[in-house]
Length: 301
Ligand SMILES: C[S@@+](CC[C@H](N)C(=O)[O-])C[C@H]1O[C@@H](n2cnc3c(N)ncnc32)[C@H](O)[C@@H]1O
Image 1 (cartoon, rainbow, N blue to C red):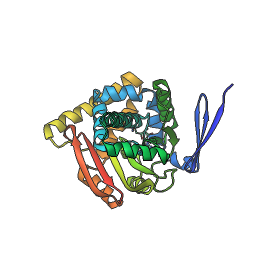
Image 2: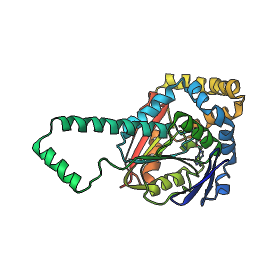
Image 3: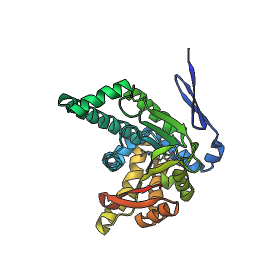
Image 4: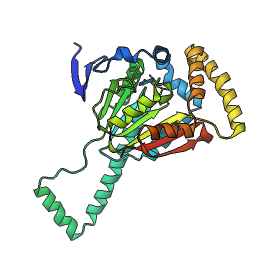
């Protein structure tokens, strides 16, 4: 018989059956769905999304996402919110990165125990007596996306890879996040913010849900700086990507939309100003692959 699980997370409610994920949130999802064309695009592409990502970028999106994690360098205990998180690529990488950091720290601690000083020995006795817990609290990653189809595909991927601990899937709009203030250490949005109708509102929401000291990080397609590369990139995007969409997903239009939305997005400098205007500090960006993608980062102080 199918069991129904009920989880409350911040101010949203997640109803989970053993087969499906159903969401109910205080955020009015009807309002979220007003940007319907975008919703429809991702509903259409959800089942081919991961295959298409590899095909369109020749696998390079994996390197861009790895670069994001490398720059983030999260430590055990960190709480991540990945907005427009789709099928969970960033969250999976985050949990894996934190796990390997924890393992590295554990190995270091074991090495230190093998050659302890008198001070280490005495402090280990006193912490045992005080009943101190070893290690920091567990890290967690929340994948938030407006599109339930994308989340379902991600959840299925997580289940088949056995990645469930510390991972939650939440339906929500980047412009009206269903989370309380000051909840997360890191907010990421990868290839998602250009789809949001009011980018300034999404940035304000990012600031609101981050803890003071928390970090905003955004991966997005940007402006190619080299004119020769720019011409090649244009030819590839407008001719090859919709054609790949047609062959793999029988959907030219959705992929045409994706390419056009990239061209409409502000360039590196303009987006940096927008992040600063939203209230973030120490805003910087790094170009990846000659500016095909930019990684923006800023802090809530
Ligand atoms: C190109 S996909 C990126 C998915 C994932 N971050 C990745 O890098 O593979 C863009 C995602 O943005 C989501 N999205 C679009 N508008 C949104 C909004 N207003 N709020 C939350 N998610 C949104 C879409 O549903 C889609 O899953």
